[in-house]
Length: 446
Image 1 (tube, rainbow, N blue to C red):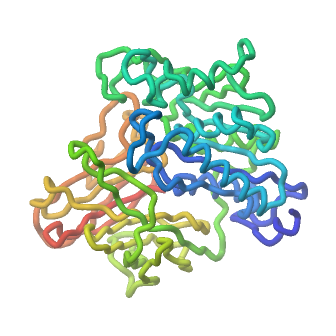
Image 2 (image 1 turned 60 degrees about the horizontal axis):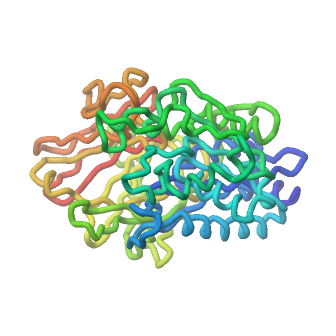
């Protein structure tokens, strides 16, 4: 293990003298491994070997409407548990470790708890659940109790009543929950963010807590920041190691190498719901990567990397300029030409995952369509400063509980120009591309 640590230095250099445990990161509903990007950088910047940090990438990340009814393109709680079990065994075999640390966000906590309860506890030293709705996003014994997010349903009832009085966790691992004080959209007494505005949800802001766990409360953070934010990282690092991290930021690498997977969108069998996400590889997609001017978003010369992805959907590796922002372009049959603008990457990553997008029928008459997106958190007003193309706050972002992670604008027809997105000091400059030629643009925050 020490040899592996010496060979796999991350952003901070070599690992600590004592072997550090492998960590398996488990994403939530509809999400990808890529959401853990900055968390991995933070662990690496505090000496964790890159080879001991593994983020799972569930092919079908959306939960079924009813856990007990098969649904194409979606997974049950048992499906996710089985997938996680395979990943844990793979990590243990690769590292030679006896146990892993599991760090989950939102729905990802469900397979972690289920895995431990169903025989896997001995392979887990620590389990950290950020924003997991451990008592449901609603408590309703009448309406669809088989939904895995219903606190009155059989899945969560089994997890929360394991036999020991007053204890809601499986013995063996050390358990920690991380929750917001009152800004988690899925831990609210009123049902606005679960499609039931004005109705009681039957849960409260303390719903993610578990009896028998160390329950950490972070003021002001949103649902995703309970896992992906710097405060959540600091709490998790302290829980695992017994000490505070040296930094909650990133220690830049001299040489940055990037790669990842390209995926697309599936079609729901219910035509009223249209497209839904999956993490299947989008074989045959053509990817180009350009360095861009930080002031104008213009490309700085020809593509720094280009290629057609194979059956595994992997693109790269690409040796990036760590001082330059980049534009990632995806072209694939059945999709719009997708332009994704990102700020400079301070560290390497193999999970810079790219998703091809489609131009909606309602947007085809626009001159250009651009979306400013924050995958690892939500925009929260008045907590955040969010400016999009000079409009503050960015269009469509409501005040109150943080619930939206994207703002979209439609520009009139005209020549290409710079479009700027700003969020709490992070600034992305993109270019408008014509919707008439089937282009969409995303400004994606780290």
